[in-house]
Amino acid sequence: NAGVTQTPKFRVLKTGQSMTLLCAQDMNHEYMYWYRQDPGMGLRLIHYSVGEGTTAKGEVPDGYNVSRLKKQNFLLGLESAAPSQTSVYFCASASAGHDPSGANVLTFGAGSRLTVL
Amino acid sequence: GDSVTQMEGPVTLSEEAFLTINCTYTATGYPSLFWYVQYPGEGLQLLLKATKADDKGSNKGFEATYRKETTSFHLEKGSVQVSDSAVYFCAPLSGSARQLTFGSGTQLTVLP
Image (cartoon, rainbow over the protein chains, first blue to last red):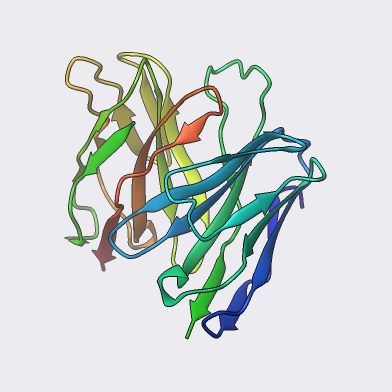
């Protein structure tokens, strides 16, 4: 099925460990995003990319790095995990092309639950 | 930057009750407006959208009207079902990179 796939779905880390979350989309979308979801705070944008080889900071970028080496993949890295990064992470993608309705819709992955002990 | 104020939850209703979830926003320019829904253990799905003033988005019995004068996009449904139990997010979309700004979400539980 076409869509956004996130791996892994669950991960437990110890403080100071590093890891990478992978997001893959097969819709040929130009835009990709990483959000984190915390109780009572909705989703907050970490980083985003408007095309292969480009990335930009969102609302809460500290402690994270990203890369977009291929159009279909957007990687989120934690170099030294902290308990404050315990969260559910969502990747999303969107087309840059013109949508007749006037609003390009973001398609979300199922989420990756990360616990940092 | 953009911001969203969404009705605090949790909201608990009986089946067939009327639902309103309030949403007001501040945004630069003229954003498109979305409601997303998150069912337990799942990602976010688009529920409905509106792209200009007075547009009404609708889907699965839910409706929301883009009110530019009050910067609001309240979600309504005339008769909720148990299967509507989920978290609902209001989100304006703006900016050259089409960024969504989410409200804090409203947890809805519908009892049989």
